[in-house]
Length: 165
Length: 315
Image (cartoon, rainbow over all chains, first blue to last red):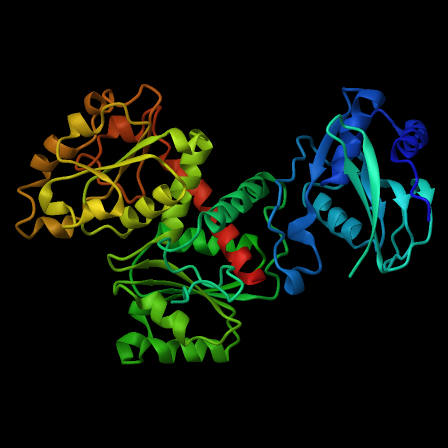
């Protein structure tokens, strides 16, 4: 597969997100890729938009097998989640387990009015009845492949695709 | 010799003492604790990490703060928590510690938090338990109180993030203090360049310099230009012996008053592990003053204990 250009996809994603922003929308990026995307989206969508970051390490369903991630970052939700329309952002959508963890964590902050999931790439392979409403690119990758969003020093995005060994 | 606290891969299996733990693991605990601080400020102060796990708090010696914060920490991780004040239960009927442990293991306990008056009690239990069980030392005799040492350095890092640039003074009964020992190991491992102890000769261990600290007997010299003042509790029971003349006399020489604190840096913070003896080792004006971080220490203690428990449960 040819790797999609991450910057082009970011533009597509931005255009697709714009129409869903309401007055009481808050954007939440999932650490780390989703948080980077949210950071770049914020000045475009409006700096006054409420925003936050989730690190779902404490809510993962594989803690018993894999333990705690060694670089856990604090979640930061500096607004009242109650009755907000949450726009949840992640880089790559795969099994849906991260999104389940993120939704569980969000509900521990309050009861949102709605949650919309927007991702840069939906790579297929979901294992739960969870799917993104907005994606910039849909594809089917084999389980052995690992698609990752990375960031250059100047803040622009690029993808890497690796074969898991 | 293999460190009994670590797995074969060098990850934390039990937390028994800060001595011998690498800087990497101390930082892992402190960084993880940072993520838990925010959990207490949410609508739901709980995460599901230890759901289905059973934590047994075994307190063979009295404690209020440590026992309560361990219990709260385990509950905020969604564990089931049993707290046993063993001094008042089967021990008084003659059961040995290891029999108590075996019985609780038969009830499928996953983690033991142990406080005991005997140095080495937690080590002994850690050697005895099945491989899937973790042990946390919550204070053993004069030996160690690692989670207190960790929450103290966590608090320092919160207020004075440049650890490699600090002068820290530990004041009081270092001789009988497991807290002091854990603090010294944590501070030196994390690269604090100058750790001082200030105490009368009778309240210092003989070879205290070997721990890498500077020794002072005079508060006025020792407090000069320090960034952090860590007071220790004067254990009243020591007063009965010949170690000290009287608590009034002690307060005059080693009690932290606003006048003595003025010798430290103007933005120095004051810490105390509790319980405080007001008017013995610390003046109320200091304990309740603007430089005191004694209550934040208690709050951070929960996040640090959550970090330790979740790292152990995951390894």
